[in-house]
Image (cartoon, rainbow, N blue to C red; front, side, top):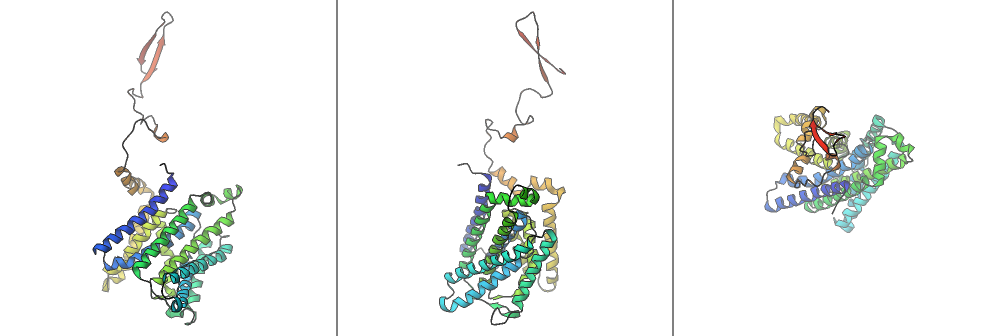
Amino acid sequence: MNLNKSTKNTLITIGMVVVAYIIMMILTQVGALSSLMKGLLVPLCIYAIIAVALNLTVGILGELSLGHAGFMCVGAYLGGKISCVLEPSMGNSFITLLIATVVGGAVAAVCGILIGLPALRLKGDYLAIVTLAFGEIVRSLFMNSSSESFGGSLGLNTPRYDKNTLFIIALVLLLLCLAVIQNLIRSKHGRAITSIRDNEIAARATGINVTKYKLAVFTISSFFAGIAGVMYSFSNYTIQSTKFSYNYSIEILVMVVLGGMGSINGSIIAATLITVLDVKLQTILTGNLAVLQDLLYALILIILVIYNNAPALKGFREKYSLQKLLHKLIKPKHDPSHRADDEAKWDRVPTKIEMNEVLSVEFHPTSSTLTPDRKEGR
């Protein structure tokens, strides 16, 4: 069965997540997974969802947004409040979680529409400033709310779901996020979105409704950011607005940049790497060494970003990339009868004649035969 490149990429992405889940389950069953890593399973899914959602806006659409922590904050508080309201009558059940997830994601999507309509008329730094201001406004509103509504500065106490069950639910939501975004990218709408990123003026000239596509991308991205916020509320006993500061938005953006703009697989890997790195540094550097946590964390991120983007290291990255290694491991046997169009070059086509030699044929009028003669320089 022949699959096109986009379908293969989608299957590879989903396969990565499924294989990671199987490995985690095996390690859990044999007792080889530490309690620290068990506690990271749900946050890894949450960070992967928010990183993929932001990559849709920043990497695919090409618009810089620093307000996704605000959308996540909306989803966390609204989803947490819904669960608090429904828990006395319905208990901490799957139905409660499902309703809270839908409401949190929907409200975050509505906020995305309300902010996107005026903000998406801006570009570059101006759009980043507006979305960053939105995140800070949302955080301030929840911080200054009453204790009866959203807990105020002390935070909102929410029911916590079972970690093992919540991990499976968060993983399913991650797969849903990947399926929606991957199918959007490889559809005709995805091609329209990437054309807007590459050249907005040319996209308008060809009749693409730029405003509609920008708003649709912003809404979808906000929806999944809200879902990530709901998962965060169910994985913690208390939601505090200080968690969703502008530093949190920048941390999510670092995941996208580190994984590669427009690379869904890269966003998942970078989200996993940064989350584990941050927790490991907090575990190793304790006591007087705790002051070095942020310094080492920033230094490692700078090194990784330089490695991924420095032009001088491009040849090294291509030579020793994971994709090249996997290709060598699963490379099919060579069949000389099948050649790709881009491989039919003179330096690759096997021949018994050196290319610096010239074949010539001399014709003698008095003879009816051709005398082949190989001469150089003719």
